[in-house]
Image 1 (cartoon, helix red, strand yellow):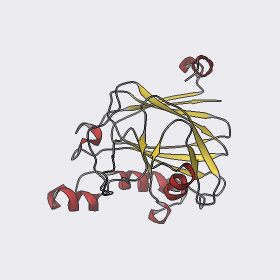
Image 2 (spheres, rainbow, N blue to C red):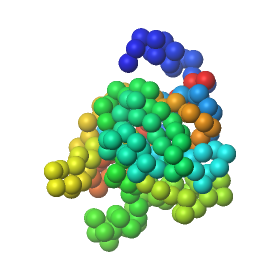
Image 3 (cartoon, one colour):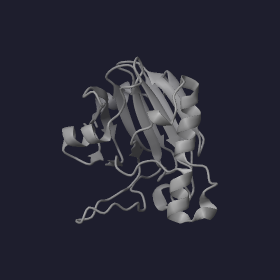
Length: 211
């Protein structure tokens, strides 16, 4: 990361600065050229994220297109986040964590019950966060696709097995995303307590936007 980028992205000059509580959803339209920073305030907090074209939400982030275009299953500085129409929605400008997951998906009440037992089905989950937030836009479960898990560590073994393990993020790590067209960003600040993605303790994150 360059000193120029640090000067431009001075938190005191941000046009938006919000502390998103643990477990909660959030959404906002980011205009072309604006930069969104997601800060992992306490470390190892998974931030489940979806991106939609604000003018036409049928165009949205595509994990397969992003992986194929980058030739990499992980997201990091320089990654272009590609839509299902082949357009660049956002570009990762800076990344102090190192890599982010785009394969693990979002937790749900159903997946909690399958992975951790029926007694865990009642636990709040990212899919429910997404549906609550999407309802404000007249959207529903049909509008959900595979998401990005910022700060989540999902290594892939030689046989292709995915495993959610202890995170590689630390307190204060962040990622900067520049909007390449007007986008609606949807976040679930993951409530998962059954695996190491949040160090078994969901914590807040900070969201900043610069023009």
